[in-house]
Length: 407
Image (cartoon, rainbow, N blue to C red; front, side, top):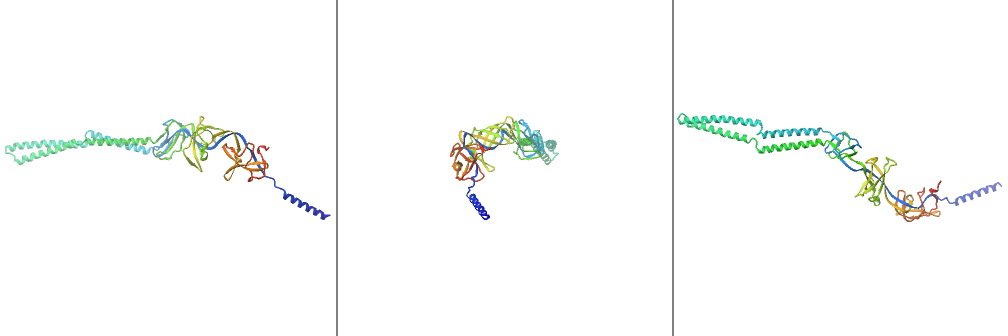
């Protein structure tokens, strides 16, 4: 009896093993969604950066060290407002040296216009006066000797010597008078005037250099960019500040090259800023890009949109989120983007057929952030597989689950 009980248990165990071996595993649970029909708003999502629609740069006109920055970022200024000052020590030294050269040139010109330098005039006029006295004496001596020679009281040689002496003095006097007359020639005056003009031009340059140490606002507006601080060294032409009106902003939108075909002038744009959650700003595309440029690992076109900012709560230089509404399709057949897959070169989706799935090639059109328009391959009401925990393949038996039906 005991032996038959053991045999029965063994048979029962073998039957159980055979039943378990022949039992098929339960099909995997796969989430599905229905293909719908609705109005689809195609939205291109990307990023951008803001700057005033109208602005002007304030640049350093000369190289130097920033002595003082006189405004803060965000300050409202008028045209000509002093923004910053460069160290003026070298410029003031240059002005003083130029002023001294002008004063010296003016003094030289005045002396020449009076007939020459006083020392030269005095020396020549003294020599002329002395020669005149000596000539008068020599003439008297020659006249006296001439009378004596007529009476036989003086020799002919003595008379000739006296006459020669008078003639020599006349020649020296004439030469000194010519030197006095030629002391200031017209060419000397022209040269002096030229030196004065040159010195005055150098002074004007030095004064301009001094004035350039003061960096002023090129226009009225808000100082929205101020990249310098006290003590910074700047080269000639370096940007010191940017000033503009912030009530209207230009938004530079970075659109990836493949997406540029979806953008055109006049499309509405919605802008958000992470630092101001819940706020949105409206804009309109106004300019398309003229070239493609690298932006990190992306190749983008820079699209411009103009944004009204009456409350001044969106600052220039902000990195913003951009949504461009590129198309509105009424009665569009729509499928969740998550259901679209690629197999080789084909784009498609796994569609529920009974308890199995089949592959359907799909052609899509416009797209929103989460849905795409289906132009062919699917019909409203079709159930399409969403991403699952395991790989899917055509013909696989599944247990469909519709998330909207879950409690």
